[in-house]
Amino acid sequence: MDIRQLKAFSITAACGSFSRAAVALSIAQPALSRYVKALETELGVKLFYRNGRGIILTEAGKLLDQYAKGILEQASRAASEIAALQLSPNGSVAIGMPPSVGSVLTVPLVERYREQYPQIAMRVVEGFSGHVLEWLLTGKIDVAVLYNQPAMSNVLSEPLLKEELVLLGAAKDPSKLPAGHVSAKVLAEIPMILPSRPHGLRLLIDQVFGKAGIEPNIVIEIDAMPSTLNLVEKGIGYTVLSYSTVHHLVKAGRIRCFPIVRPQLTRQLLLATSSQRPMTMATRALTKIVTTQMRELVRDGRWNPR
Image (tube, rainbow, N blue to C red; front, side, top):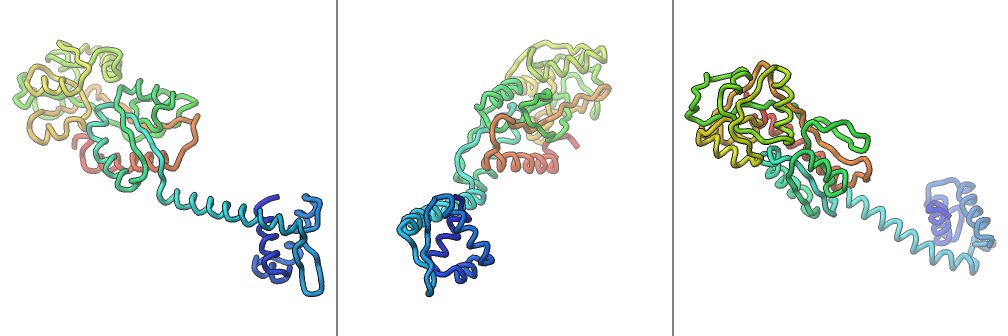
């Protein structure tokens, strides 16, 4: 039995006539007769008695009609609830991202997502890209924002943006660097505050500048971004971060920003989901809003220095 057969049978029973039921269903009468005949063959019973005035249900037909009404009502309710779910998804969803991204993205993302999908419980966690990737693979989160994620068959990813990393110093700038771009070789001459290995940012700096024969003058290693920025602001040393993380400090005149050249330091920001789990409506909605929010942040000059 399938829904089409049950619907054809139920309407025919209600109409008491194949011709009237065919009109109600907007199908040809021979097609309707085939539906009913298929049901009778499958069940091995007659469902209707034919007489000169039309048709009436047999005892088996009456029993099937009772079940058919319940089944068709449940199918209709399921379709309605699924359609409503598409308009207003519910459930829960979790996203993970590095702190450097979270400092800019989390607040506007949560505000927009909660505004559009108030019935969905949202969880945001922060950690290094390696940890965020592990959480995605183990199912602890549904969506991940990552830096330079390696190609993996069980991870689906799409690029969000190419991020430029910049040199940051105190507003008074104790080393009196010239305004504008600075050559990467300057990092070997000024006191640097950088995260330790195997932090992703440190590995990237070592790789890119190492190829250029540049060894930064690291005087302090700190893996906490807020503490690093506090020390930079006090003039203890310089650091390298994305412009987005210090946009507000640069605008307030508390920190100076120097784009780095020869070589430039960039990294790819990706949006990732697991191919091992189905994409729920809540997850799909979240990935869409993340992409939209990132475009707006870039457009507003929050991500790369102009």
